[in-house]
Image (tube, rainbow, N blue to C red; front, top):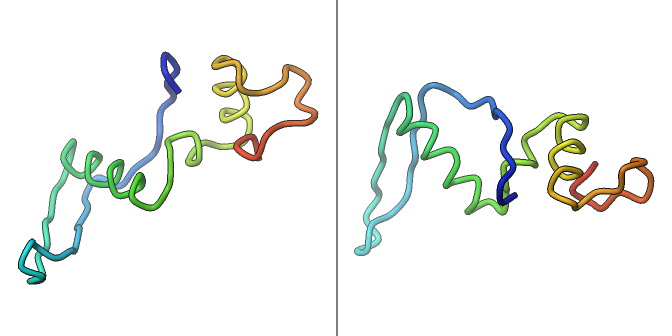
Length: 81
Protein backbone atom coordinates (compact mmCIF):
# COMPACT_ATOMS: atom_id res chain seq x y z
CA UNK A 1 0.00 0.00 0.00
CA UNK A 2 2.07 2.95 -1.19
CA UNK A 3 1.82 5.80 1.29
CA UNK A 4 -0.10 3.76 3.86
CA UNK A 5 1.25 2.01 6.92
CA UNK A 6 0.06 0.21 10.03
CA UNK A 7 1.84 -1.62 12.85
CA UNK A 8 2.17 -5.38 12.36
CA UNK A 9 2.91 -7.75 15.23
CA UNK A 10 5.88 -10.01 14.58
CA UNK A 11 7.98 -12.35 16.71
CA UNK A 12 11.17 -10.91 18.23
CA UNK A 13 13.22 -13.88 17.00
CA UNK A 14 13.09 -15.86 13.76
CA UNK A 15 14.85 -18.79 12.14
CA UNK A 16 14.83 -19.27 8.38
CA UNK A 17 15.74 -22.57 6.73
CA UNK A 18 16.59 -23.00 3.07
CA UNK A 19 19.17 -24.26 0.62
CA UNK A 20 22.15 -22.51 -0.93
CA UNK A 21 23.09 -22.40 -4.62
CA UNK A 22 24.61 -25.89 -4.27
CA UNK A 23 21.37 -27.25 -2.77
CA UNK A 24 23.01 -27.62 0.65
CA UNK A 25 20.82 -26.90 3.69
CA UNK A 26 21.37 -23.57 5.43
CA UNK A 27 19.71 -21.89 8.41
CA UNK A 28 19.82 -18.32 9.69
CA UNK A 29 18.72 -17.08 13.10
CA UNK A 30 18.03 -13.46 13.91
CA UNK A 31 16.45 -11.24 16.52
CA UNK A 32 15.17 -7.68 16.60
CA UNK A 33 15.00 -5.81 13.31
CA UNK A 34 16.70 -8.60 11.35
CA UNK A 35 14.02 -11.06 12.57
CA UNK A 36 11.29 -8.63 11.45
CA UNK A 37 12.95 -8.41 8.03
CA UNK A 38 13.13 -12.21 7.75
CA UNK A 39 9.44 -12.53 8.59
CA UNK A 40 8.50 -9.74 6.19
CA UNK A 41 10.41 -11.24 3.26
CA UNK A 42 9.33 -14.84 3.92
CA UNK A 43 5.76 -13.53 4.03
CA UNK A 44 6.24 -12.20 0.49
CA UNK A 45 7.53 -15.61 -0.61
CA UNK A 46 4.30 -17.05 0.83
CA UNK A 47 2.25 -14.51 -1.15
CA UNK A 48 1.51 -12.23 1.81
CA UNK A 49 1.44 -8.47 2.01
CA UNK A 50 1.29 -6.65 5.33
CA UNK A 51 -2.43 -5.89 5.14
CA UNK A 52 -3.06 -9.66 5.23
CA UNK A 53 -1.71 -9.61 8.81
CA UNK A 54 -3.96 -6.81 10.07
CA UNK A 55 -7.18 -7.23 12.01
CA UNK A 56 -10.29 -6.68 9.87
CA UNK A 57 -11.09 -3.15 11.09
CA UNK A 58 -7.52 -1.96 10.62
CA UNK A 59 -7.29 -3.67 7.21
CA UNK A 60 -10.46 -1.92 6.01
CA UNK A 61 -9.13 1.46 7.20
CA UNK A 62 -5.79 1.02 5.40
CA UNK A 63 -7.46 -0.17 2.20
CA UNK A 64 -9.99 2.67 2.35
CA UNK A 65 -7.20 5.23 2.82
CA UNK A 66 -5.41 3.72 -0.19
CA UNK A 67 -8.60 3.99 -2.26
CA UNK A 68 -9.00 0.21 -2.53
CA UNK A 69 -12.12 -0.36 -0.43
CA UNK A 70 -15.58 1.21 -0.50
CA UNK A 71 -16.42 3.61 2.32
CA UNK A 72 -19.61 1.69 3.25
CA UNK A 73 -17.85 -1.65 3.80
CA UNK A 74 -20.23 -3.37 1.38
CA UNK A 75 -18.90 -5.03 -1.76
CA UNK A 76 -15.40 -5.13 -0.36
CA UNK A 77 -12.69 -6.88 -2.34
CA UNK A 78 -11.04 -10.11 -1.16
CA UNK A 79 -8.35 -8.21 0.76
CA UNK A 80 -10.98 -6.64 3.03
CA UNK A 81 -12.02 -9.92 4.62
